[in-house]
Amino acid sequence: GELAVNAANRPLMSIVRQERLLWTSLGLITGAVSFIDIRRSLWSSTSALADKFPSPPPPAAPLPADEPVFGSRARLGVVRTWNSSVDRVFGDLVRFLSDRNL
Image 1 (cartoon, one colour):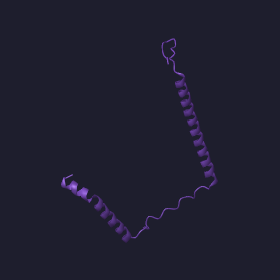
Image 2 (spheres, rainbow, N blue to C red):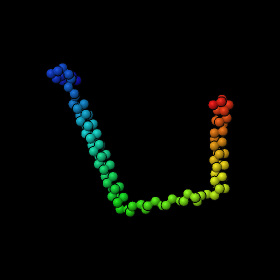
Image 3 (cartoon, rainbow, N blue to C red):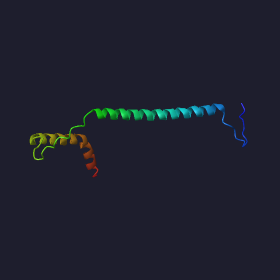
Image 4 (cartoon, rainbow, N blue to C red):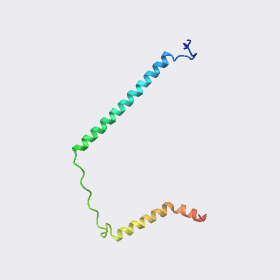
């Protein structure tokens, strides 16, 4: 069909395009409003639920620095295991870089 032309010789927006624009705008507005409403509802319900529980207890006192958590044998075993793991993982890379003097 022919498009109607307004006084400035520009085609007017067809009825179908106007309806698409209207329903798209209404859909976007409805989605945004519902998103904000749900978000607000979730925050308020979370806040209400958090208020029902007592506050967490204070943190425990730290261990004294002079008392080791593990003995020296356990620490040496961990260090040895760590070093061998690093050697296994990066050994080829280190050899490659050392061969190239990097």
